Image (cartoon, rainbow, N blue to C red; front, side, top):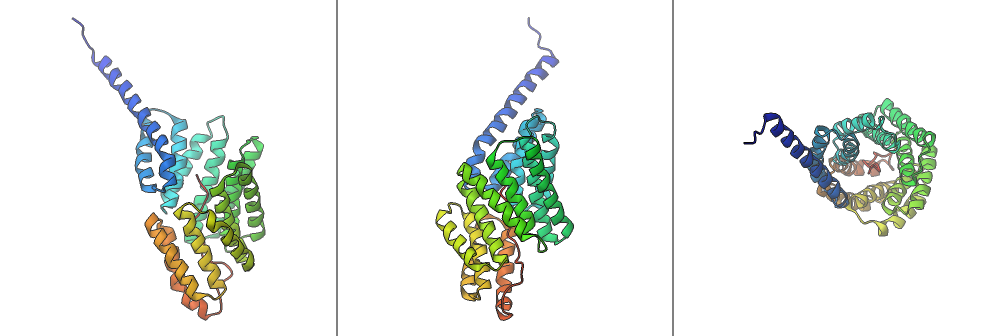
Length: 304
C-alpha cells in the first residue's frame, strides 16, 4: 500500500499554487493592453492587484516590478496619487536589483509624475522641485547606463518637460526644449498617441507664453488624429483655456462642458475637478479681462 505523507501533499499543493499564480499573472499581462486601450482603469486595477499578490507569493520580482509600473499609471489616471506613489516606489525598489536599467528609468519617471501630481494639488514648490530632480535622475540614468530605447527616452523628456511646465514658477523655456526632444524620440518610433500627448503639452506651453496662434494651430493639428476619449478630454481642457484667453466665454463653456462629460465617463476624478473649477471661474475671469499667467494644469502624464 502506498502511503502519501503530509509533506508530499503540501508539496503538491505548492506546485498547484505556483501554477495558478503564473496563470493569473500571464492572464493579466495578456489582458492589460486591450484594457488600457479601452481605458478600463478600474478593471486593470482589479486584475492587477490580484496578479501583484500572485507575483509576490510566487517570488517573481520582475513580474512584480512590471505590474507595479502598470498600476502606478492606473492609479494615476484614476486620481489616486497616494496609491500611485506606493506602486512607483515599490517598482523603483525592485528595479534597482535588475541588470536591465530600463525598468529603473521607468520607475523614476513614474515617481516624478506622481510628485508633480501632488504638487498640483498642494501647490508646494518642494514637490515641483522634487519632480524635476527625479526626472533629471531618470534622464541621467538613461544616458549613463547606455539604454537604447527612443520611446523610453521620449517618456523621460515628456515628464521632465511636464515637471517644469506644471509649476506656476517653472521654466517654460526648459519645458519647451524637453517636449521638443520628446517629440523627436516619438517621431523616430512612430508613436502616434505619444506624439499627440506631447503636442498637447507643447500647446499648453505656447498658451502660457501667450502665443495663442501656435496653441490654436496645435489643437487643429491634433484633433483629427485623436483616437481615445482621454486625449480628446485633454484637448478639450486646453481649448477651453485658449478660448478663455481669447475672451470667448461662450465657446469656453461649451468646450469645458464637453470635457467634463468625458472626464466623468472615464472616472477621471482629478480631471473632473479641474473642469468644474474651470467652469466656476470662467465668468469672473472674463469679467476681469483674461486669465492669470498660469492656468490650472490637467492631470496628464505619459506613463504607460
